[in-house]
Length: 427
Image 1 (cartoon, one colour):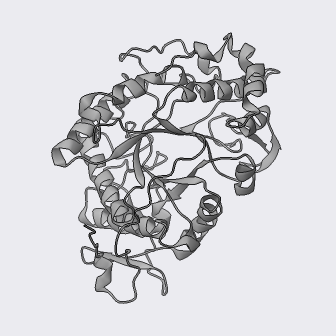
Image 2 (tube, one colour; image 1 turned 90 degrees about the vertical axis):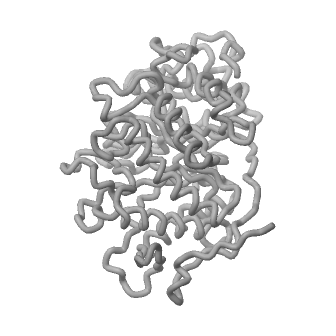
Image 3 (cartoon, helix red, strand yellow; image 1 turned 90 degrees about the horizontal axis):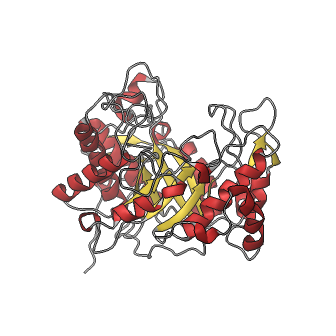
């Protein structure tokens, strides 16, 4: 039986509407896990990526002035207007990738605009008032905030569902950013974990419902940092929580309210972000009690998701690695260490069947990333992220997933101290 969904936006003539029925295309199976948070589309395609992460700032999508001609959508009797120029700029990022068969993952974020009227709708009202945070939590506390989140997620889900090929297609929806760090990276103020989970579950369910109206098989992901049984050092329990505990509490809450097909977007940076030697992490183990889950012990996450209470329709949730990179040390061996770390991470992922995508961060070094130089490219002097020249990692990234990989990766094996990639723990 096919169900037909009618959006509340139909209440007003001439407004954008949802398709009569969700797109039923199955989730694709790309040739490899190779992915990138894309800055330069042409270079990303030349590198042969199959997955791409695109940041979407929904705060910038809110057209508070309701300019004539802007797309609109009505939810709960409230009319919301969207920034059409920003939507079209996102089309220009998404379409060239999806047209080439790249799976695009929208990383849906709510950056503070520092405009009172906009942030009152888009940002959680309990977020710290001094704006000393990078990304805000979605406003799930206020009726207008919930209506806005539904409106904008319906608009995006419909636009990039495949029903409008002129706009491109999104297959994955990452809901927020590192939600277990709810003071620094998903700010909803100081809260005990139960409250943080409750607020996030509301946001996830709203987005899930919106995506399902437009696409039957697109996937939605919960993003975490690399903390597992501990939270970030120097931060209180009301500012960050262990990723494992948040994951389990979220899963329990969702089951209580009606289970959903959620999946996991993990960020397995090395334990020290400034040390690219992913194989040398000292504080991690293959135990459930490990403080962090990095590439060295990524199997811990896979094992955890196989618990019966976490399964979806008898199968484990899927994993994507949606944000992680390796620092380039300013020493002669810096680039070879970075390249070897990528080879190590790639080989580890090949041994973990639940990992669907390894989306590298960054494309180009960024001058405002705390001194980290994670890019495949160097940034030009005196710029924030203008591309200047390729690093050694660019070449090993190019060869990943191709017949040239085996020889290229073997050349980097001695850097890691391993005798064979088969020494890596499999799942």
